[in-house]
Length: 610
Image 1 (cartoon, rainbow, N blue to C red):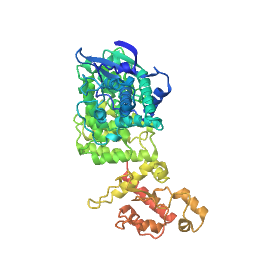
Image 2: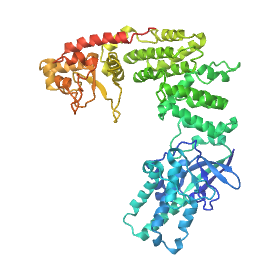
Image 3: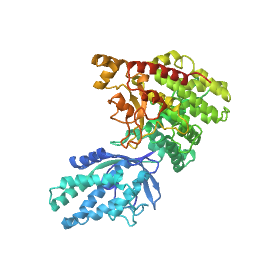
Image 4: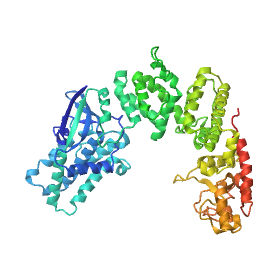
């Protein structure tokens, strides 16, 4: 129930009696406002008349008559920023205190009282969010200003985090405006800024519970960071905790553990939630089916970005504890699939290959298999066999672009449905999967695969081209000669990269015109268009931005700057051995090498096979 909706001045929100405080619960995301929002608030206060409306907040009154406080459900960005703005004004007024009139003697004490609270655990009117050192950085600033009795520690990288930068930015904005003013005028300027900020208006909505707060979210965030579907799931979970006999701390910790499994990347998180539903659709829909409802999947046929929140809102509302237990378990498996899990798993090497060949659409099938490993009587060797087969499948799919991307989710969901209907066991599970994947409707034929391999493979899919070249090179490596062809340098650039032997650029060097086309520029351009992106003209070399347009011999013999290793075709990879023996590179060499490599790749990525 909404208890009250009222408009307040900032000075009323930060009432100087100090008999209450605002607390940001730790399950909210960290302080995220940046320069755009800081500048907008500063400009709004500066350019508009007093009592300008600057947003709204939602609070739940908690505590008791002795220790009352407001839990801020929405508005932490605004309240934190206003507090830091007030602190910046206080900082500069203290510096110019000797230039203030006697009539203004009560200004600094009043400003101090608006920021402080004797009841608050951090002695301040606002207890910020704890993530990313928000609370610690805020307390350090207030401690440095003498507003806290207790001493707060300055943590490493304080100056680069948002709370510190916000405070410093407001100081800089005011200093910029006061640059040519006399001290007396600076005091007048600061008092004027303080008065306008105090008079600014906020709407404060007080509600009875988290459940009530949730219904107001979509109308909020005036200048706030928009809430994502996953943010809203988090908020709904917290709102439902008390009705499910769970604590918000327990729900928050479980939810944070899940997001830790999924990495910080929002696209990865969203993909997990879609794949979780799509993988376990039958079981997740069971509680929602009824005899009167003929819908097979009342929650939805497939999870998409548009219906994701609607599906998970129903799952959360139905049985929160069971939902959190199950999805956390699946999140752990997903952390293996996306290589987020730090501990070594039996499948890591093959999963690295699956990531390199862009096989993420199959994660919904693998998550299902991992969760049901015992029921399906699968050994680790069986699951590794499946991942290896999926690697082959995605090489063929990504090279041919068949089947289409939009069909992949359906294909893997159909396979799961078939497994649930037939319940095969052990190696038969793998046989069933490969049989279903290997049909002409679901997999590129040998003819399609060969035709694509013979085409401009680099132009069609550079990621797949790199993967195949790396696998060709790795196939000749031994334990003693093993080289990580996927390693990256500190700048996140591959140490080993694809090299066009006959350069791909439009400006063909004269040495290559002479070698490849007997000095005929037009013929060289014709060859460039026809052959430069063929598999036979591609190889793997050490990364060097200056290598591409050098002559063949220079590229063959190129060494690192220290002269200790070869970067070019003498780099020791088996895939370059024949090239390193040549003194020239011709179209016939490209044709011959293409035929050989295509044949190797057809054998290496044969599918289906068990």
